Length: 482
Image 1 (cartoon, rainbow, N blue to C red):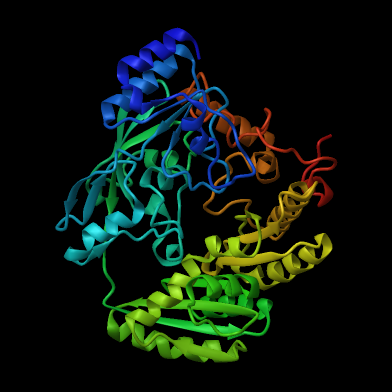
Image 2 (image 1 turned 45 degrees about the vertical axis):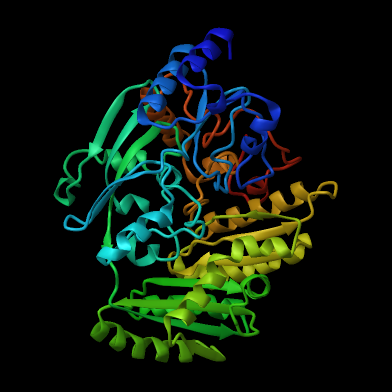
C-alpha cells in the first residue's frame, strides 16, 4: 500500500473505522482456521453500501488486493487476510432491509447474522432454512461466499437454493444485480447467482441479498439412536435413504464428539460409540406415518437404544449438543483441524472405518461430527500445536482423509470451501484444463486478481506452515507432480 492509497482511504473512513495499528489488526490476522495467519496492511469498517463500493474501486485503481470478512468463522482460511492487503469488515452492515411475509422473502445486508433472519421471520410462521452450526454468529455474506449448508441441507439444500437475488460489487468496482425478488425469476438466463454463491470471494462482494423464507413445519419428530459401532451408524443412514424417506436432517457424532458435547452442554446423550440424530418434519399426518417406518428401520440397523424427543425442550437439547460439538471439542485438545470431505452415502460406513484406521496409523485422536444425510464428513483432528511437528502430522492425516474421500467417489469439500487449506488438493478433483477455465473465468471478472487473492487455486506461498516431503495425495496415488 502506498501513501496515495492510504490518503484516499482516509477520505472515506474516519480514524476509528480505519485500523492500522498492530493491536487493532491482531483480531483480523486469522479466521477459524488458526493454523494460518497473516497481517493485513489495514482494516476498514464500512457502515453503508457506498463505502464498500468506493473502497473496492479504490483497490482496483491502485491494484491493492482485498478480502471481505464477516464474523471470521471460515474453517478453510477463506477469510484469511492478504499480507499487506486490505481487509474489509462487513459486520456493521447488519440490517434486515425488508421482510415480506406474503412473498416469503427477506432482503438483507451481508453482515446480518444467519440466525437473525429466522428470529425476525418467526412471528410470521416463517424461517430461513440453511442452518450451519455457527448460525448464531456467522453472516450471510460468508454463507454466500462458501455456499453454506447445515444440518437440514439434506432436505432443503444449501445457501444457493435459498438466494433469489443479489446486488454485488465486482472486483473492478462494477455494481450489478443478479436474480430478483420473485421466485418466478429464478432459472431465466444464465445462473449468475449459482456462479457467485460459493465463489469464495473471488468475484467481489455481495452488498444486498434477497433470500427465500420457508413456512415453519407443523410438527417435528426427532429421534436419537445409539450404536456400539460407528460403521453401523453410518450404514443406518444408507438404510434410511434407501427406504425412500427424506428426513429434514440426519447427523452422526462419534464417542469423542459425544463426550465433548456432553461435558459442554449436558445434552443427556447415552454412553455410545456413535449417535445418529434423525429429524422428520412437515405436516402431522405425513410425519406420523414416516415416523413409524423410521422406527422400524432404526431397530433393524442395530441401534441398542432409541430415544424420541417428547417435547420442544428435549428436541432443543439434542440439537444443542450437536450444534455445539465443534467448539466443545476444544475441551479435549488445545488445537484441532476440522476437515470437510464428502463421500457417497452408500460408502459412509466404509469411510468411517477407514478414518478409524488412519487415526491409529498417525497416533492422533479424531472426533467425527458430520451431516450424514449427504455424506459430508467433518472429522476433527486433535493435536497439540506446541509440540514440534504436531501440525504437520495433523495436516498429513487430514490430507489422507481427503484422498480417501476422492477415492471413494466423493469431494474435497462440502461446505467449508477450498480457501487456503485445500487449494493444493484442487488438481485431485479437476483436470488442468478445468482449472484453467476456472481461472480464466475469474480473470474475466477480476483481471487484476485482487479479490481474495491467493485463495482456492494452487500456487503461491501460504502464510502458514507447509507440509514437508511427499504430498498426502501423492502417497495415496491420487495426484502426480511429474
